[in-house]
Length: 439
Image 1 (cartoon, rainbow, N blue to C red):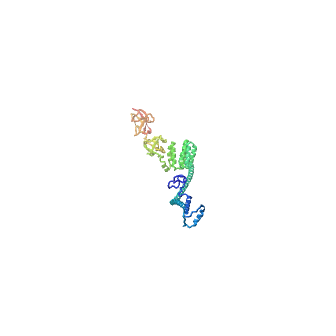
Image 2: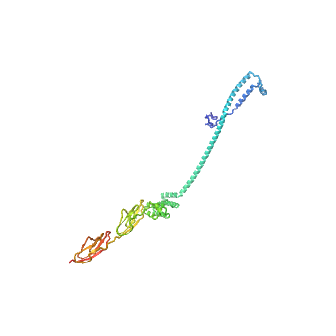
Image 3: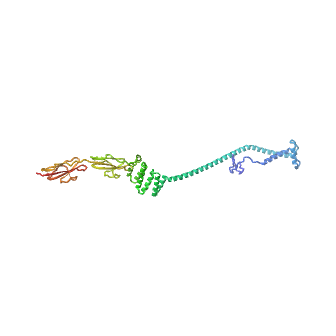
């Protein structure tokens, strides 16, 4: 089938031309010539059964008379009329056959036309459905677009609000302070850090940032006092204790950490367990003893101590063995340094050893005059050494050491003796006045 509009071939089953879009016309166009031919054939048949006029001027009159005559009337026709009738009959027969074929075709086409109209109705319905669907899709798309616009507006508004809230929040203020600190704008940084502390004074981050500014300005006292004041107002805030401990470590003041933690609550000590350094323990209670003593120290870390009354540091004597306490008074001070290098508080113990001293040494013979050779003896107890002089001077450890009886010299002799124990402690002096006159 070809398109009536553009002449393009239309595939079977298609109702629209694929090239120009014109609808296919399934019903043939009306042709007036068919009615004319029908009337002419009918007239020719009627002419066979009526008398023909003799002249052309009497045609209408003859037709009228023919209508008035009975239908079963006949007359004799000439040879020429018979030939003309036969010719007309042949043409009429051909036309009748043609019209018959057309009638059959129309009968065949009528169902097709009805089907076509149904198809066209279905097509129009389907097309309407497609249009409705397309309309709904456009409306849905428009709705989605409007929804997206609304959502985007909301998101932008929320984003702007979020930015504003963040800039004025604790974190936003800290960010501004940090940028100012990095740019060495210390006054500006201090202002922002203080503003952040005012927003939330329980969080240690702002205090740490502010301490960095003070460190950069070499104002360690300000940083320390800032932390201590915050801890005084929040004694249960372990985060502040840890921030202060880190500050002490960073500024080489780790020895202050234990003092800060001293007296804090159990909860704080539990949270700060890594920073806690317990004082060393002494094996001997402080007091007065009459014998030489040994003191052992123990602790969870390295122990450093002094015995001269000075404060111990990591530069002091490292404890490796018990400390010997001899005669006299000894003050032991010790610290324990944990794994983080944090020293404990100083543990102090005072010991006094008073070893009993013998009285003045016993010297024989007693003072007097002698006429025969005589020896002088000194009684030396265990643990003592005796020293003596024979010129009336007081003996010392530099004097002559007594090793056995001494011959008394002739004439007058003033003999003096002392005892010295292991600790170098000296007894009182024993004196004897001898006069030897040999006879």
